[in-house]
Image 1 (cartoon, rainbow, N blue to C red):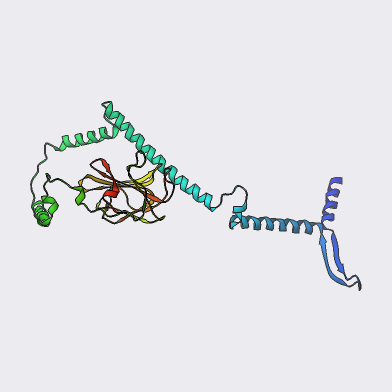
Image 2: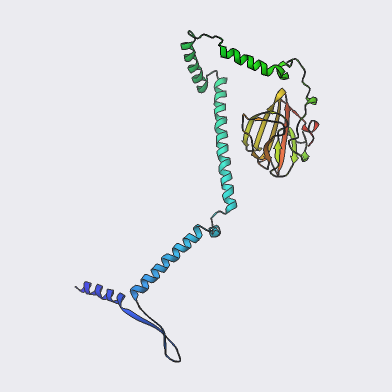
Length: 293
């Protein structure tokens, strides 16, 4: 009973009304009067605190003020995080490819058959053994029409009738300049420097020196974004330290077509430039002897 009376007394104290009034000091006129209880004060303070916490939370979460919080990354740091994540993903893919290549190469050296080749040879052998006995080749009417159509189209194609014994002269080939700029590091000026470094503006277009097919387009740690093109007559051109690549492996490019943008990627790069290499029959050439930059 005493505890119940105590609880009721406490509840009455909370609900007990207090009068708050503001008087004019000279005339004693009541200017403002309102009544409050302890319960009203507690409720009002709690509501205002919750509203203030919600407003501050929204202000920090959806405005740029969150960047001033210690430990929160700014826009530049978030950009670096995203770029590093992409580079790590590229490195993981490259490491996996090299591991697969090394495993296959080691298996071949040991005289073993790699799993992929073994599976392919097994499926090919099993399929051939089933259909070889009943396989017959006959020339259909559609095949004859296609042959005649191809021969009609290729009768003026000079490349079909070129002699394989003809000596190829590199001096007679016209190379499109990959980029216009200043050569700051020439061919062979440093050890293992098989090309030239051409200083150019960041983001400038890098062009293919002649028609060809992209044989490599990817990222390396030392040289950044690299693209390699296979040209006729066993000519290969290599473009390194690009900002980004515009072509993928297997795509055909034309002479003067944009294939990348000048950048500063890779550990061996110290500024926006293009490292260009020209190879012929597996031998590096001095690009300045054949191309005007």
